[in-house]
Length: 293
Image 1: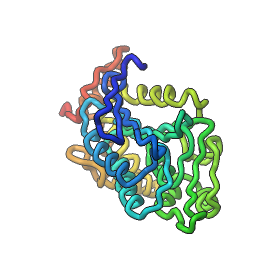
Image 2: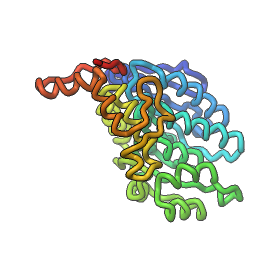
Image 3: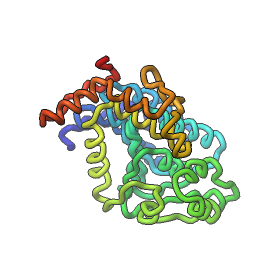
Image 4: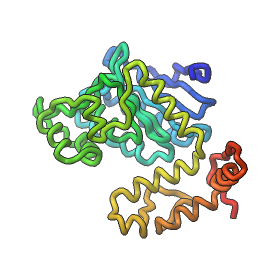
């Protein structure tokens, strides 16, 4: 996998960037080592700027991995901008993957396209919020997760929003009211992370997941991600019938969930995938939303 990586160190003083797997995976790396990559206002502003650029990168199918230590900065401006970053992640057409693990300095990584995060170390407060906002999270078995604002007299209200929508309410309240950490296995059991692997294998596992996602059509992934989040807040019958199209654009705008599959079948990439399956060959996707009819 390393042979397919190119490193760019000129994104900014706070961020670096790597391209993996023929540029289909973009990994953004937080570099503010002196501050242990805390999610400061400056760091969040850089992330918002970079995610806005990468979200529309045509070659990217797993938009990026973000490496970040979950810092604990309780300033209101930081929370406000952090919330903007979380909403940007959710609206990105590509998935975001997060890595969570323990390296020479603790870092938590977040991926976009399939929003995907890998975590090494401690994901605290806004860092935990970043984890809960990603589509997929790969965590090291040594990682810990906490929302400790209660201990300093400032309840983690903003991080608690996605936390309450990710884990059971009793678990979320336990974390928010005690401020105590949970370990990686507990996070997996509660649904806070997707996978737990040995510390030394976090990046390898994250790239493996990214590679699996990157094989598929970018446009179909974008449609599927948008539909998934739009229907999760609906009741079962409503989810089958109606569809909140607030995340969808252009040809993806539909009113009925059933029509999504119909629209999907009209896409060139869907037809190519079906034909390739029937012909027992690998599909060659265009990664566009072009229709055959």
